[in-house]
Image (cartoon, rainbow, N blue to C red; front, side):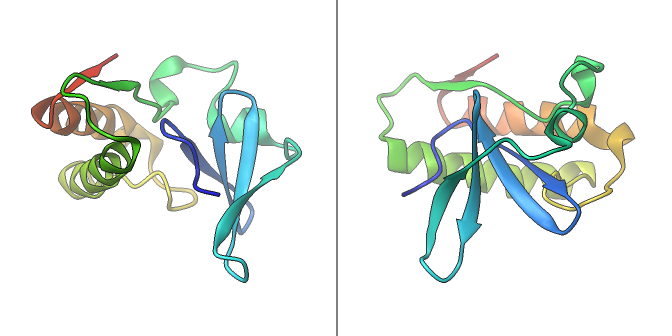
Length: 120
Protein backbone atom coordinates (compact mmCIF):
# COMPACT_ATOMS: atom_id res chain seq x y z
CA UNK A 1 0.00 0.00 0.00
CA UNK A 2 1.22 3.50 -0.73
CA UNK A 3 0.48 6.32 1.65
CA UNK A 4 -2.45 8.38 0.27
CA UNK A 5 -1.86 11.80 -1.26
CA UNK A 6 -2.03 14.73 1.16
CA UNK A 7 -0.39 12.98 4.11
CA UNK A 8 1.15 14.70 7.09
CA UNK A 9 4.15 13.09 8.74
CA UNK A 10 5.08 13.43 12.38
CA UNK A 11 7.28 11.75 14.95
CA UNK A 12 6.44 10.37 18.35
CA UNK A 13 9.66 9.32 20.00
CA UNK A 14 11.70 7.45 17.40
CA UNK A 15 8.72 6.32 15.30
CA UNK A 16 7.57 8.21 12.21
CA UNK A 17 3.83 8.24 11.54
CA UNK A 18 1.83 9.42 8.56
CA UNK A 19 -1.71 10.77 8.76
CA UNK A 20 -4.45 11.46 6.26
CA UNK A 21 -7.72 12.72 7.69
CA UNK A 22 -8.38 10.28 10.58
CA UNK A 23 -6.20 7.42 9.30
CA UNK A 24 -2.70 6.74 10.66
CA UNK A 25 0.06 4.75 8.96
CA UNK A 26 3.60 3.59 9.59
CA UNK A 27 6.07 2.33 7.03
CA UNK A 28 7.06 -1.30 7.50
CA UNK A 29 10.46 -1.78 5.81
CA UNK A 30 10.25 -5.58 5.99
CA UNK A 31 7.14 -5.50 3.80
CA UNK A 32 8.05 -2.31 1.92
CA UNK A 33 4.64 -0.81 2.47
CA UNK A 34 2.60 1.47 4.67
CA UNK A 35 0.24 -0.19 7.12
CA UNK A 36 -2.73 1.28 8.93
CA UNK A 37 -2.32 1.61 12.70
CA UNK A 38 -4.42 2.87 15.59
CA UNK A 39 -4.10 6.55 16.46
CA UNK A 40 -0.95 6.73 18.57
CA UNK A 41 -0.91 8.33 22.00
CA UNK A 42 0.41 11.85 21.61
CA UNK A 43 -0.80 12.28 18.03
CA UNK A 44 -2.78 15.44 18.80
CA UNK A 45 0.25 17.18 20.27
CA UNK A 46 2.59 15.94 17.53
CA UNK A 47 0.34 17.13 14.68
CA UNK A 48 -0.69 20.41 16.24
CA UNK A 49 -4.36 19.46 16.58
CA UNK A 50 -6.00 21.95 18.86
CA UNK A 51 -3.08 24.34 18.68
CA UNK A 52 -2.04 27.24 16.50
CA UNK A 53 -2.75 26.37 12.85
CA UNK A 54 0.52 28.00 11.75
CA UNK A 55 2.39 25.15 13.47
CA UNK A 56 0.95 22.59 11.05
CA UNK A 57 2.93 21.61 7.97
CA UNK A 58 -0.13 20.39 6.10
CA UNK A 59 -0.66 21.96 2.69
CA UNK A 60 -3.61 20.93 0.53
CA UNK A 61 -2.75 20.74 -3.17
CA UNK A 62 -5.18 19.84 -5.94
CA UNK A 63 -4.06 18.96 -9.48
CA UNK A 64 -5.03 21.54 -12.13
CA UNK A 65 -3.45 19.69 -15.07
CA UNK A 66 -4.93 16.20 -14.53
CA UNK A 67 -1.73 14.94 -12.88
CA UNK A 68 -1.90 11.26 -11.93
CA UNK A 69 -1.72 10.17 -8.32
CA UNK A 70 1.80 8.86 -8.92
CA UNK A 71 2.85 12.20 -10.46
CA UNK A 72 1.25 14.10 -7.56
CA UNK A 73 3.17 11.96 -5.06
CA UNK A 74 6.47 12.61 -6.89
CA UNK A 75 5.77 16.34 -7.15
CA UNK A 76 4.84 16.57 -3.47
CA UNK A 77 8.02 14.74 -2.44
CA UNK A 78 10.24 16.84 -4.73
CA UNK A 79 8.63 20.02 -3.41
CA UNK A 80 9.03 18.83 0.18
CA UNK A 81 12.77 18.31 -0.38
CA UNK A 82 13.10 21.72 -2.04
CA UNK A 83 11.03 23.49 0.65
CA UNK A 84 13.08 21.88 3.42
CA UNK A 85 16.27 23.13 1.78
CA UNK A 86 14.90 26.62 1.26
CA UNK A 87 13.40 27.06 4.71
CA UNK A 88 15.81 25.12 6.91
CA UNK A 89 12.85 23.14 8.31
CA UNK A 90 12.16 19.46 7.67
CA UNK A 91 8.94 18.07 9.19
CA UNK A 92 10.37 14.56 9.02
CA UNK A 93 13.13 15.46 11.50
CA UNK A 94 12.02 15.11 15.12
CA UNK A 95 12.29 18.18 17.35
CA UNK A 96 13.02 20.47 14.43
CA UNK A 97 12.53 24.23 14.87
CA UNK A 98 8.82 25.07 14.77
CA UNK A 99 9.56 28.75 14.16
CA UNK A 100 10.59 27.78 10.61
CA UNK A 101 7.25 26.09 9.77
CA UNK A 102 5.65 29.13 8.07
CA UNK A 103 8.64 29.45 5.71
CA UNK A 104 8.46 25.75 4.90
CA UNK A 105 4.73 25.99 4.13
CA UNK A 106 5.26 29.03 1.87
CA UNK A 107 8.08 27.30 -0.02
CA UNK A 108 6.09 24.06 -0.37
CA UNK A 109 3.03 25.95 -1.63
CA UNK A 110 5.09 27.97 -4.13
CA UNK A 111 6.73 24.83 -5.50
CA UNK A 112 3.43 22.99 -5.87
CA UNK A 113 1.77 25.99 -7.52
CA UNK A 114 4.68 26.14 -9.97
CA UNK A 115 4.03 22.50 -10.87
CA UNK A 116 0.38 23.10 -11.65
CA UNK A 117 -1.51 22.59 -8.38
CA UNK A 118 -4.13 24.70 -6.69
CA UNK A 119 -2.86 25.13 -3.14
CA UNK A 120 -4.94 25.94 -0.07
